[in-house]
Length: 146
Image (cartoon, one colour):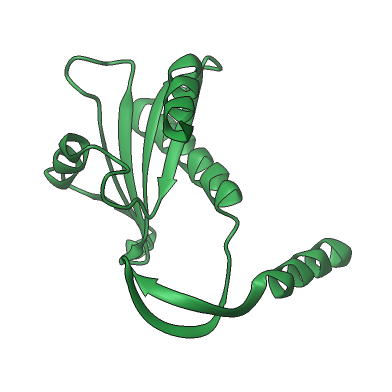
């Protein structure tokens, strides 16, 4: 256990340093910061969505489905239609406000769900997730790289 934690501490210090800080596209300052591992964060958020899906619907997300997560999505990462639909929903609060989430299924696509997550009442700690069949998720990821 100690070796694993030592690795994490060393990894953190390797990624830490002076970085330019931006709010949106506006430069704010240069400060001590670190580069988070967004792939790892997205995997964790994906697992949270899988658990919430079970909590809300009583079923495990099938193996043929996957979760696509966007952490702190910027404008344009997610359609305004999805963002608008999420904004109009009542939030579910867990852990005394540590986590808030909301979700919906589009009326024309019961096999798809969208999730909005927020942690510690901090808009900088938000994520939007999509559950869909794996081939659909691969297609979306492929079109975003192009």
